Structures are given as C-alpha cells and as structure tokens.
View 1 (cartoon, helix red, strand yellow):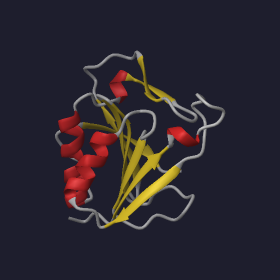
View 2 (cartoon, one colour):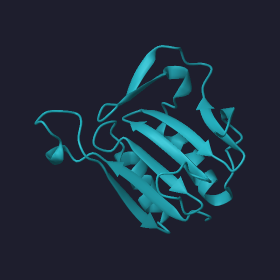
View 3 (cartoon, one colour):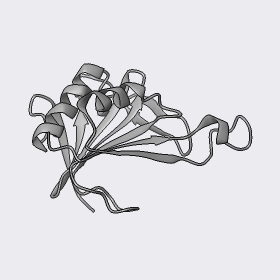
View 4 (cartoon, helix red, strand yellow):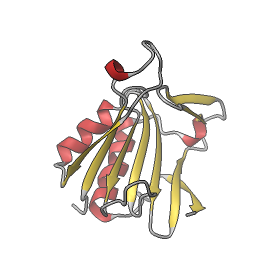
Amino acid sequence: MLLQGLELVQYPRERRSPPGSRWGPWESLRSSGPAWEAVVEAIEQLDRDEFPLLYLHLAEPEEWEQPMHAMQVCGGLGEYSVCLWLPSALLEYRDASRGAEDVEIWRSDQGASLPACELCNDLAVVIRIARHFADTGAPLETVSWESRDRV
C-alpha cells in the first residue's frame, strides 16, 4: 500500500461555542502508515458534523497547503464527495445518473452542500475508490471523474 497518512478532521461537540452552535474549533487527527482497517473505520465514521472530512495522503502534506497527492472524502451517512488531489490535476467524482438537487454534506463549521450528481451515495464504492487509490495512487477507472486544473 502506498498510503503514508490518514487525516480525520473533527469538530468536537463539547468544545463548540456558544452552546449548540455548529461553529467551533477543529482538530486534525493524524496517523502515519495506517492499517487498511483504520482507513475503513475512518470513512465509516464520517457523519457530516463532528467528523465531516478526511484525507488519505500518499505524500506528507505541507501544513496549510493543498495536498500534493491525496484523496479527500467529505460527508457521511450515505452521501460522500470524493476528490483526488494528483500532482497534475484535481479529479472530482461524478454520477451523471443522479440529479442536481443540493445535498448538505457538512453541517459543522462553514458547512457545504453539493448537487447529488457530484456525490457518491454508495459507501462500498467510496471504500473501493479509497483502496485503489491507497494501493496505486491513481483514480479507480470504473467510476466517472471530472478533471480540474490545480490552482
């Protein structure tokens, strides 16, 4: 496996202020050389709120910089945005069979909503994409991707 690190972003509920607010400090929970089981557990833990986002890093990221070679998964509970940060491009998962209605995939902090066609609603597919990326550093070719230039 090429995977060098797992980064799970957490917005601890008990530290949000004011009480009941969705805003608050966040933490980056990082582990180096994670076992595959830890990756699956982290993806399954995504809940759109306390754990809205994770990265799988193939290269050590620079703090506060865009990842150089990583997979980002945002969302949880049956709706996931999947992006691959490759050295030459940013690839975003697409499902043309789904509609354009917005789906809220991140409820804490700034939040995020995306059209359903930009989301994967199959956890098994997200895990398959992650495994392929962790093993090869490349996108899974059996799903659709939209390419964007890296900024």
